[in-house]
Amino acid sequence: MHRLGIAVLATLTGTALGYHPSVALNGHGQVVEMHNSGTGALWYWTETYDADGRVAWQRHGRYDSGQTPAIALDGADRIVEVHQSQSAATLWYRTGQLGADGEITWSASRQYDNGVLPTVAFTDGGAGSRQSWSKGL
Image (cartoon, rainbow, N blue to C red):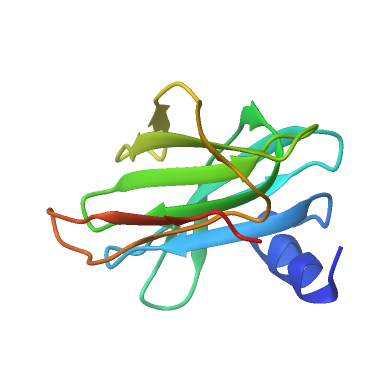
């Protein structure tokens, strides 16, 4: 794991047990972090980021299998997550809704393309946000 990735993951989760962390923060101070375990499991943490710079942890859980996750979170608390299969060059996505309690309600995982190192971003933070996906390399 890259040193920066270890530092980000250790800061967010209190451990350095994970790979390829991806972090999204919206304008309400809600944070979602995702990483893979190195053995095929994909995990998330939800947090809130306070005005004084403190992070309050809310939820942690396994949500899928794969590697190299990327996440986008908009101002309406909608999530789009993309990742590569753990065993093939296929790309998958899930959408979700972040609840006030930090729990994520996920859609089913769906394949959308072939490739590696996917990325995802919302193009604006409003209620009419659109997502932009990349196949990576």
